[in-house]
Length: 458
Ligand code: ASP
Image 1 (cartoon, rainbow, N blue to C red):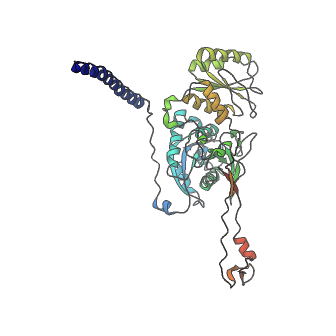
Image 2 (tube, helix red, strand yellow):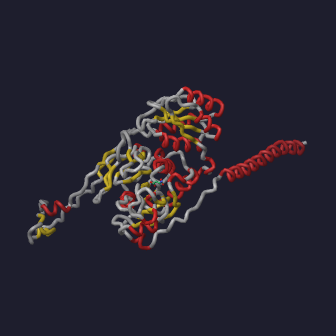
Image 3 (spheres, rainbow, N blue to C red):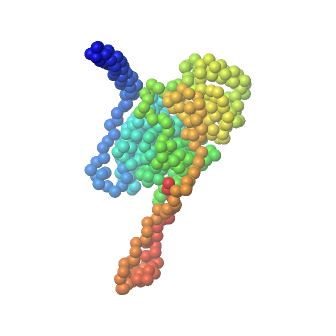
């Protein structure tokens, strides 16, 4: 009797336990299979290792990741006055860097990612470029990325939103090919390396530097088809400048205030998605009596998102409006409203329409494309546009915040009775003296001058 009860009991317990463990092991096998299927195949890059000399050198190590453009352009028939007729993306970066003077502020390496005009790059190639930059920054202290100027603002913003490293990424290019008189290529390349080597844009995300002016990737735009000072940041202006003696930064992008916190990183970690996840996203320009054809055509092409460059504060025609409603309702297309004016913000947005703040249409397209690659939920995307897309400054301090100065304590004066010889007084052969009471000679004061800087730390 007891044996029977025991037998029944063990069957009762054992069978469900067996079934449960079978289910658990099946589900973990399934999970592994799903993960294996989802894990993107990531590209690898032949980033040059640091040489012995570079490791031993006190200079920062900067890598130039080259993609081509006019900077690497060769004038037609060797005509040194051929400003407009040239083949973009011709010279290799190793060749160009070897023609620069030995850099005063950095040891320089190169990585040839590609060699063509900026407009020739696909979004999938930009995915690779971003991962190449991050791979390079695992070794180097800063990266310069050379690109053509035509779509530089899009490439730079794509890098800004996707590169995971906090190290400096400086995008540069040129308006004149490398080998014409008055070319801006060599100076831009030299100065961009200087900015990257200075480390001053660490935590800034990607910046663009041409013509000695440094801009935030989110804000910069090409404003003129030919002039060398074509880049500008309407509404915002420059972040800083690079001159011969110094790289000066006068303001920081909003994101730099989140340095060192998890909020600094965007949600767009390309290592977690396949490049096939990058969807088609288009731009439609509004104008007097614009028809809805542009939207209908893009929908037919299979776009998942459309940015409208509206008039004024983002207005679109009744034709475009009807086509937008249909695309939202029937095709679940997500729209971002921007303005065609060249500056100013667009607010509001509901349902499948998101406001683009003051992103220009090209920038908003990059932001929407990445957002759609990581989420299909319009409310999540709206949140990303309001945070990472809008990027307004929001500084909060708590009770524990302490202010401290980065200036090091002055070293204590040596405890000696006799005067200490420091340096000759300019214009005399007499050595300057510092008396034990601490009164310094003018020469000594000059030598010990330090830059003061105050920073807040959490
Ligand atoms: N067509 C060139 C490009 O964008 C122009 C330039 O490099 O400035 O690649």
